[in-house]
Image 1: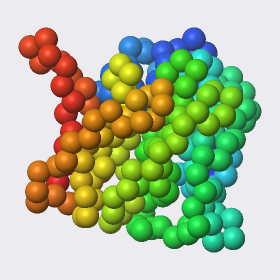
Image 2 (image 1 turned 180 degrees about the horizontal axis):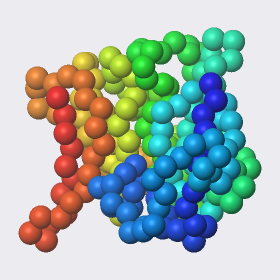
Image 3 (image 1 turned 180 degrees about the vertical axis):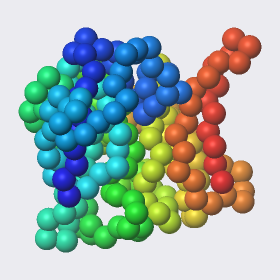
Length: 221
């Protein structure tokens, strides 16, 4: 399945390093952005993307990043991709996980729906129960971990970063918890179970400050 990447902002524009932007709340400082597009209007470049993935593109240091799932002989190759923001040229295409079964739990979803996070020379990717990983910006894997839970419709919620923690919601019918991984090693720093009864949820945690105290807001079902 081919997807289109659109680069219509100035090359010195604000970075967009995670799901819903720098603060995770969908706010941007950019002004004067185009509001209409067509095959010829306000298109800087367009390039095909192999596979199927619903992750949002993220942008930092002159590169556009996303994830995809490529089916090969019934298997699924979960991959991270990067493109040059000026030209659309592919600069990174790395396999992170390989699955023996490429069957989707829900045809409206993909095996690569959560959005990556960019920080410095690291790219953090999450594929739900199929795996979570950190890579260098040249596509080398730094660490990988699998966080098991049974999700009815597959992966959905994206992770978030807080200081030296990568925080993920894992909500299934068999198990449901919020987990914080050491962003440098992938080891579990803390894990908090959901209150029963629990079930499916597909949300992204958000760190906020209330009365001077940092809190992670994590919505479950």
